[in-house]
Image (cartoon, rainbow, N blue to C red):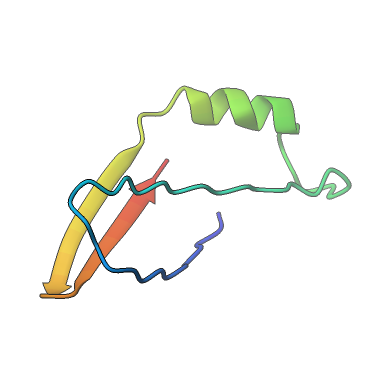
Length: 67
């Protein structure tokens, strides 16, 4: 499963909305894949995502989303 890391910085305003977006592309020609993309979508939709927020210092908040 991929582990994606991306950083963003801005002058935070408490009214700001933060949006996390990720796109995954699957190799349909890989003979070791055990599910078609449609099956993967169904599998992921059936899971409950978890979100973890941690603050390592006064200016840094880490957001981890697991599906």
